[in-house]
Length: 319
Image (cartoon, rainbow, N blue to C red):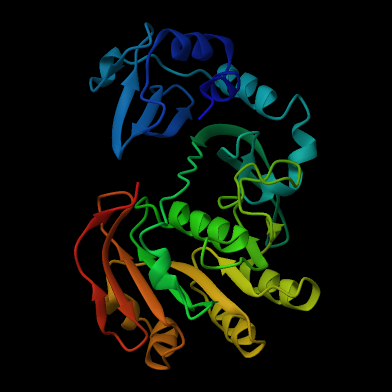
């Protein structure tokens, strides 16, 4: 990860604090700015505060505090002084910057009828650090690819346990091909710019040479658009859930595409108990279920086949 591309996003004082300090950049997940609140970072699931000297501390009273002016200045750097050019992304509550890092924003929402038109008085920023971990899908790939084709696969994981990172590397390897698999066309619907981390339409993360991506597009609509226009062999989406998502998945399946998807969940039983997802499970739509370990990013707990037979049951670190 290029830490310089992150540091230069911040207002002057905050930038100097980061330059003086020595955060663990490879394990850094988030940097949070809130008006008049402590300068905070999330590293490997644990929160730390930053002091004026750039050192990390667990003591809130020692943390430097972020001003409203520093948040405005940071936004100017993030948007290259053209925040209006990112109006579409702001309506969804985030911006994507070079390197694939995503900046979540919150403040006063402007409504047009019942729809979000924009945002003003932005007072909260969450810089989510993008991490590519090429090869993290190596151990699960033999379960996903078999007999020359991709098996319909659902990744199940609690938040912040590596499901998006794992899906990203599966997409890359399936698109590029491996020694035993020639590679195929993958269509990706990236509703929140997390898989590709696209900046001005160009993915900052490596999704492979045969991948087509729809950025900032609703999943249900995007899946149908890809099937109609790009003829993918595989369709990949992150975090399915609603009724529209499930209907679109079924349409993708009926068109003969293979499916890669993720869902928030703690176990097979958790997914099976939900009405919409449970219907897919009972119909044996998916041929593989990969369950990630809660509290440990990138660790596979179990792998099941489409009928619920456990194929793998030991934790194995993928990262």
